[in-house]
Length: 123
Image (cartoon, rainbow, N blue to C red):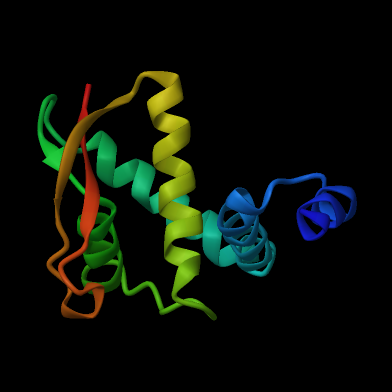
């Protein structure tokens, strides 16, 4: 009980949200170091999404593969920069009503260990 009270005073957060706080801090750190790379990725991703047909499903993994294979975009300084750039863009496009949430699918990249990833569709 004393530890929790001390934790609350030091952080203003409950221990249950420590993972969320650390995730957000890590994403902010990665995003702060992406600079021009992030803008290039987001601009190209917007172009890619505009070329999709209405209702066509896609993932950020699909966008990343296109960027690397067809646009020659280099790997960022940290692997999480992809999520900061593409995930952030998709959240913004969801809020703007330009894309919709289709559900989840399994990642195809072997390094992703078949984790669930969000699937979107163009409106």
